[in-house]
Length: 271
Image 1: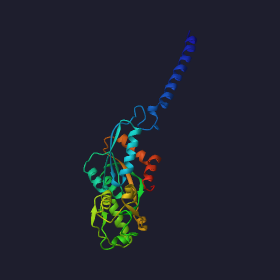
Image 2: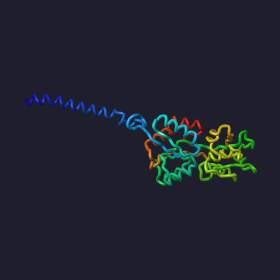
Image 3: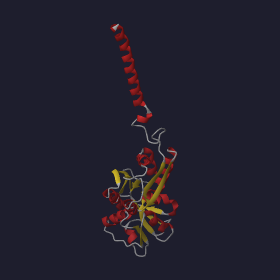
Image 4: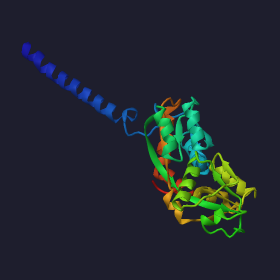
């Protein structure tokens, strides 16, 4: 009788072990437990809700395009942007403004946020940008160099020195040992460029990407000193991000081959 019980028990044990192994294998291969699965795919990890991105003004065109792509790839999400001078955006973040992502036009302005403990993880440089002189269409002033901007009677606009584009312009001027007194200092690069577009200034020192975005409203003049003032652009997830998972996915898009293609098309340099 004992032998019969043992013969029956062994197959049952084998079947139980087989079933357990099958369940374990199924659990490991299920989409919900796959660590390589992309956020936003169908299932428990699907993204939704609003993503608030604070970004440097020079990123407006390219980030708007990427925001539209993100919403299309992740139905149920909405990307809301706040563009402006990086220093002002950093001050808003450290002052408690709710946001998920910060993309700055310089490591210095990003440091304001990291030093305050408002960033999650280490910021990553995703693009670089260089300066260019924006003149009126046709370049009536015949501006061909940074030194030409110092000529008497020429109305030149710069970004404020606290703004990355202004700090970069000052760095280029210092490297050339040139002194320039602008007719105004603007709070962000778009405001400086607008002065030329409205013919309120003869020229402005802005980013190459902004000259390209303006199309035929302005004309760009390259100058060699810009190589001494190239800005790195870091991006970071914010510590108290209301929608952290979607924010991580947006940052991933910016840094992906797809995102880099959009940014390169806008004139940004690779990091």
